[in-house]
Length: 346
Picture 1 (cartoon, helix red, strand yellow):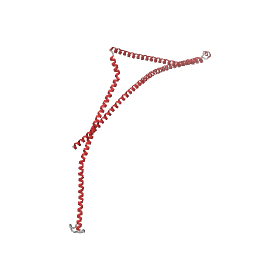
Picture 2 (cartoon, helix red, strand yellow):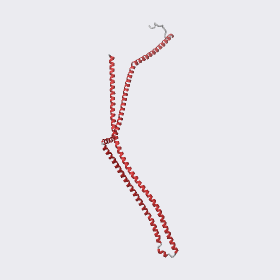
Picture 3 (cartoon, one colour):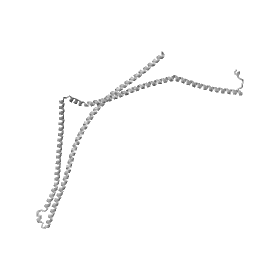
Picture 4 (tube, helix red, strand yellow):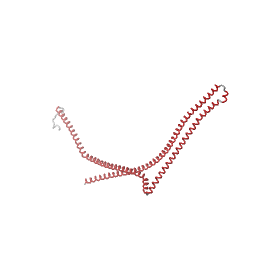
């Protein structure tokens, strides 16, 4: 039944082979074309679907991102304003603390001058004649006290000068006496030497010596020894006088230096005592100032701690108010959304 529309051609004939080859090649080209058209239409469909989805859902995401960004910007602006307010409050607290410290220092200075003011007011309240009498008595008392101190100091200095002069005189006399005694032994030795020479020539030897030449020779020896002894004694005495004067000068210089050394030692001792007293006084003043400084610092630290607590309370209050405002904003936003939905339904 299939052969009615076609001519009876053998499959193995050349014409049949050509016809089959043509049909197979035509079928292959159409097949590929259909595949190409299918994929191109599929790609177009995907592009269209993507555009539709982007138009449908992309706008909602952009609007949500914009709302979130706007909300964050509003919160950032609010936090910036709160930060500026807190900085301003901190500056105000710092200024208040500086003003308080300045007032405290001024009050301390006024408190230190308060006894003088009280005395001055007390003196002003006195009658004029009483005040005049009091001033005169004070002047007299000051003059008497100063005069007595000066007189005592003058008497003490005169006594010291007299003591030192007497001490110097005693030292000079003692040194001269000791040196004179030491030099007197030289004179005694010379006298003993002359006496020894005289004893060598007794009176009866002159009668025993019969030879005039021997007698003359002995007399010459005696004369030479006597002259030599006296010359040695004179030279030694002059030398000893020179040495004695020199030693006396050295002794006087030594005494003067000792007196100056003693005076310097006394001055040093007095200065040392005054220095020790000043050091002790300064130490006491330093201790008092340190105690006062510690008390003031403790009070300032307590005030600072109190101000810090007040600052923390203010910050917590600000944070609580910010959270309350944020909660109210969220409630307002929820109410607005519910209202919009209600209006949309209506």
